[in-house]
Length: 423
Image (cartoon, rainbow, N blue to C red):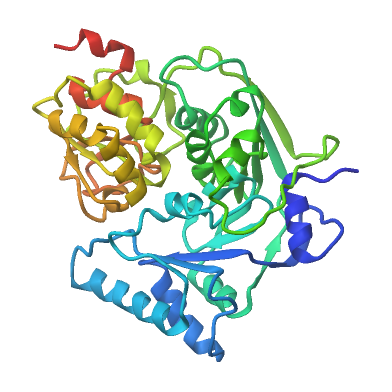
């Protein structure tokens, strides 16, 4: 009997020939990360364990991205603690403001997470790295402390749910729409503690930025991980980028899975998830005309260069609606520079958007775009729970960068194809 991708990766990390769903294992960790919210707790717990040094100063990444540039004294103290620990432990992968980025965009960009590896992070969207064929999952801060001390962590091997996308995507439909559709079909707990595996001809045609968007939101369906089998697109992305050698791990064709869904997405519209759940996904036409106050394009879900290119294509020569605030946040410093070189930042500025340095910012209601009572936003972020981006009486609609940009111009939620009709 064959083994799935997730099972093979975990078996290798556990030093076993094979593992099975439900089995408890102890696995070697290839990379561990924390941010300015979660790492300080982990650092405090690390100090209680009794070890003096981290297990490997090159296998830990500490990224100040959530409340940075620091929005207040408390956030400044959080980063100060993390910065001091990084210096004391000689952590190689600590990235300061001006050199950093949103963690789940930065680490792949730097080649720090690779196919076939086991990666954990004290952040739920660590599952992003599954787009590279890694088993990547979020953990608690105390788990991160244990990993920093030992380089190992226990897991219960998850079953796999396979999602097969058939057909060809319509214009303006990309990875974000596929994952919103998936969550809409499965619900927020439909893949609870399973490894979602995304495959099919549609996936093979997607670039890496679109794939990262898909894996990033696997957690919103309750999944433990969101994997995409590596292929030539993956290899090309890693060429000249990978920081160490890696081994691609693919599942066996005869591997049993918990469930398999085959979806033809030929006629899929761009998707929008209405408040207050990512599972409230529906075609954009079903919510078109909803008045909005703010649009955010960025985050670890959709702040990469392809996302900004898509937004710029719609914003070029147009203005943001007078009633709307548009905030654009490149996910990393490298994305910011590339957008500058391509003239995208000029397009955004001329459209009267606000452009930010890389930060998570408004995604978690941190800063750089908090919503007031009664305000409505369209965001390319990953969650739209009650109070997620500000006041508990505000609302967030999740969408891809195309719908977000079109809506910023229209002043209401709009399909990108309708932009030509907007006055």
